[in-house]
Length: 102
Image (cartoon, rainbow, N blue to C red; front, side, top):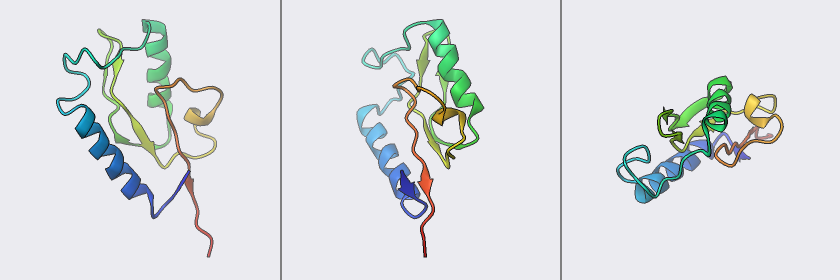
């Protein structure tokens, strides 16, 4: 969870960390970047990304030939979003933006 004021800072921190760990991008011939276990799971995760009502702030690129999905950060996720329903795979991490009181 994060506040509206913190969301841009959090996204920029994610971008900086991703650039440090994968400067050429994860969907290149990077052997250290793992793939989704099989095409069925790749499709399931892809449907979650496609079905979100949130805003893809980072990533979202996919390669079905290699079953790789770029690290994806979805901003502005609401409680009723498809990403929040049921068990999400490890490759889909969501956070909810909290409304500040006052």
